[in-house]
Image: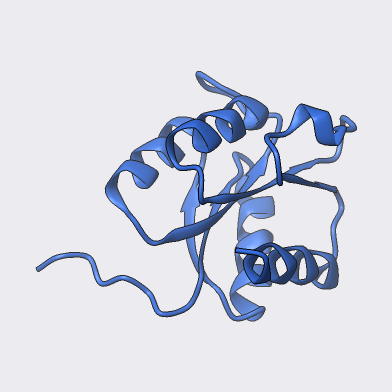
Length: 126
């Protein structure tokens, strides 16, 4: 049986810290989105290669592994241009020029209202 594509927008959350990932997943799910999780960019790429229904990648910037969140954002933009990108960090500031066109930066700690607002704005513009 094949993967059932969701009727709701699907957000891929990429966060290496388990508790922060769970918190982000809960916020995004409570906002009415379907959520998939990845602990690092390598897992995220595997998921993106396997699924065609992902609308937004919501990624931490500082992660262990072969690439950080900014490199992941550029890889996603290059291979899957329609996918929207939200990058987050509690340690570094990011300028819009650091992200692929249309990408958004959300500083940590973020609130459910901020997360919901940016996701709805990106999906409305899709």
